[in-house]
Length: 422
Image 1 (cartoon, helix red, strand yellow):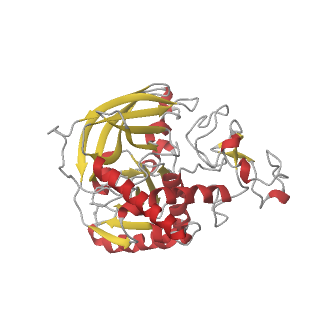
Image 2 (cartoon, helix red, strand yellow; image 1 turned 90 degrees about the vertical axis):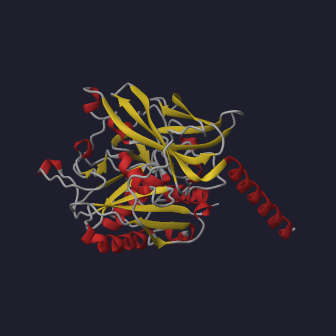
């Protein structure tokens, strides 16, 4: 019976891989578009389609089952109307809409979605989650395989190198690490920092238990100058990805608005996740789900920053703190359940970690010493002191005082690892 089950499992996987081969080439179709709006309005406009040489994603799990992210896109076969690929994601625009600046002006940001390259004509549909948490269709574009304006031209071509390789990209979580603010003379430092990144990642559970499900590669792309922009200090460096501290006027938030350069550079290797290492000792970083993650290389807390930010970018985890100064206002409406797996407003707590709680644990859970090591429902999270709840008194998604993820975050990370590697 055991052998029969194994045989059926192998046939099922062969069939799923055959499905991918019938629908897609093992390359990437990239849609660049502009996202424009203010605090209450948004508009999409087409920029360009590009074909890139690698596809790092799963050949089996083509349809997103998590429904994470502020945004979502679906790819349909044009003739049959069948859904053939989908993913949730986030962008800087979604965060910017919650800032005070968005109440005063319009802004456009460049954004990207990537998918395996279809063998037949296909329709790409973009969705945005409204303030009630419901996805609304916002933009449609049809890809035609005979469209000679779809460019395979590559803009930032640099060599990649292996850091931690476990196998076929189709069966692994593939991370590409991009250097920011490393000069040509500092490429050796970048290679060493990439090794430190891998060592740090795999020193924390659950990554330590699933190291054989990851591939990590780096791209050797020097910048003209070292470091990153620090506008408040009048520091402006010429770097390949144009990162900057003080994103949305938050000092520690180091991100880039140069989406095209990020994607052009990442295209030098197969990837599921993009991680940008910034050559700076200044405390900072940031991450957006299924978009990119950023951290500095040499701050004394660099290892924990690596892992914290990757929790956002890879597993869709939310920030569990509420005491830090952030630029957002009402980031989580308290009458809507957050999509992040580790935050709740108790609106739909049954869909979160309620079934993981001890029946004796009160909901909400009091901030008392007796519950400090208990999985619970603690008020304060998602940048709000009231109305948003987190699973643990402390966790790597809250502070760096501890050295582990809470059970809810751990479970979410494991589920995402399996989604990309099984």
